[in-house]
Length: 328
Ligand SMILES: NC(=O)c1ccc[n+]([C@@H]2O[C@H](COP(=O)([O-])OP(=O)(O)OC[C@H]3O[C@@H](n4cnc5c(N)ncnc54)[C@H](OP(=O)(O)O)[C@@H]3O)[C@@H](O)[C@H]2O)c1
Figure 1 (tube, rainbow, N blue to C red):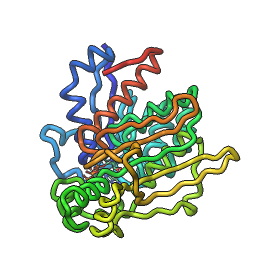
Figure 2: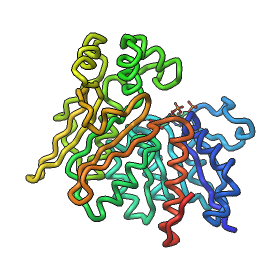
Figure 3: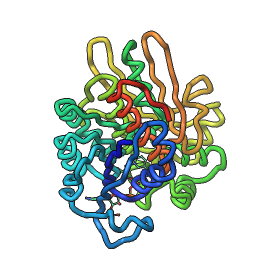
């Protein structure tokens, strides 16, 4: 049985999740994919920190160590920010490795470029985990686009914002109380700026725009508003009118080819597909010409949901290579 050598870049929440899934599912992956996946290297910044027992010998802080692994075939990337992540993945692709990323900040800006480079090198880029976590929006949209045009996408793309808005409405908590609870539960980062300012949702929206339309609007033309300006009084007024606040990211392509996007709080009524989406859930609604309107809902983040879709991405790549579809 063939052994596939894999590397994991970044060994925090997501990177460790990938490692655990590859170990826990070793036998199942063997029987379903017909191959063994071996983690050969793990890239971190600080190699002295023990994260998972038994992995110290795999750690390195040097990408050259990773890329010099003989027979390396896939790189799972779960580090943060555009650089050095993009440069590392570019080098991996040039080494003819498939890459699977969770890094939305990098992919929103450099995704099209990375995919172009991958195509030239005959390898694949998996990026389901960048957008809406475990909600299979990327693979679903890719399938839909084989036959349909997508004209408009609306989504709740940040679970932390949705959790805060849900608790303000359902529990009557203030914004600060709801944010503190989101942080206590590990939903929000210690620095929640990207979540509550709308920047996180904006990056995911740009990834969806690139997929649906092959391009993005000028980033500087997109109005991005967070939820930090919404008061409890406003939430209560909305309830009285039968409405709910949702933090919605939307992008639309018009028949003349213009693309517009915006990110911000929106009041929705009972008929709106995003009305019932509560807590940390994410949802994406797509308007298409043949299917009509389709909404996907599911967990937007977390160690295992995110890592799981990354391993699924790899299974899909193997399936494409072998000319069959693999399901785990
Ligand atoms: N957490 C989620 O639920 C989730 C969901 C979807 C997508 N994502 C995305 O997945 C990525 C990882 O998120 P996370 O929550 O796992 O982050 P995290 O817990 O902060 O872990 C980040 C890891 O990356 C390593 N790292 C950072 N900069 C590096 C560099 N320059 N060179 C080498 N290693 C570096 C860190 O090394 P040290 O340990 O040595 O500091 C750490 O192990 C991010 O891009 C995030 O946006 C996360």
